[in-house]
Length: 73
Image (cartoon, rainbow, N blue to C red; front, side, top):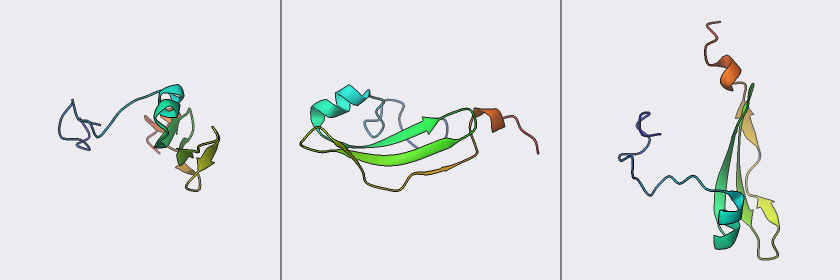
C-alpha cells in the first residue's frame, strides 16, 4: 500500500491488518479483500450487536488474482 502511494507513511493509522476476532472485539465496519488465485473479491461488512455479520455492499471483484500477475495477454 505504501509503495503504491495509497498511504503516505509506512506507519499510517489509515491501514490496519487485523483478524476477524479483533474486529469483533470493537464492533466495527470493515473491508474484506480476498486475494485468491484467479480473482480478487471485495466486500464491506458490519458486525451487528447480536454477533451477526451484515454485508453493507454487493460483492465486487474481477479476474486479477495472483495467477494473472505475470500474464502478458
